[in-house]
Length: 308
Image (cartoon, rainbow, N blue to C red; front, side, top):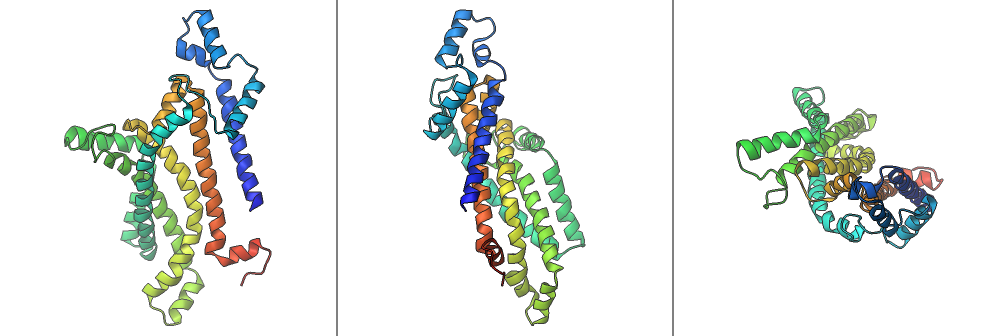
């Protein structure tokens, strides 16, 4: 447990370090915000105000110290604390990501199980074809097609922003189309492997019905490798949210990230990247810990015991 926590902390430190230096060696935020025609004294005053005239390593030390104190600095554009800007946008992102995640699981996993049970049939091929198409088509293209159909052609929904209680429908469909397809394919693969295992035939020969065997043995065993996908799913969901929010002008942290990168608003970019990284690290840590709770054999192996 301690080792996993140390690795997680080291990962976040490396992420923070990479983000800081990558931004620091890019374009000068003073020139980006003030413009190349700004007087030299104005540019110098801007750099002094935001401590951009300090040595790079000194700024790096100040940045790390600020993280430990939960002080992520001020936005170059607004002068507000960067953490406040992110906090204002975070609810909109969560309102999109949480329903999308749940819908992807509730659609993708049952479809994957059903496809594995019908392995090799027309039903299986149709489900897998749909999942591949959903995963392969880029989010921005799905979003544009949905806007054309539901906003331009039918006129049912507003094309961008949060303007009504139904504003979330198109962004959510855009993200679910890809994520549910991934879950369906992965679940089908895991489930097909379990169904081909001799244990499944043994349970059937012991007198259990096919439905009971599926519910008690096959599905629980297929869900164990599915946990691995959950950690990757969070990263995919965040990436999809960044694209989707910008397509639909959704006022979340994904749109804020793109705006801040374009404006060289380093403090805001740094906290968003660190927030995304922390979310992924914590998710993978929880997934890793849950293996032992779900499968006692893994817990015994980690403790150095002999699996039962």
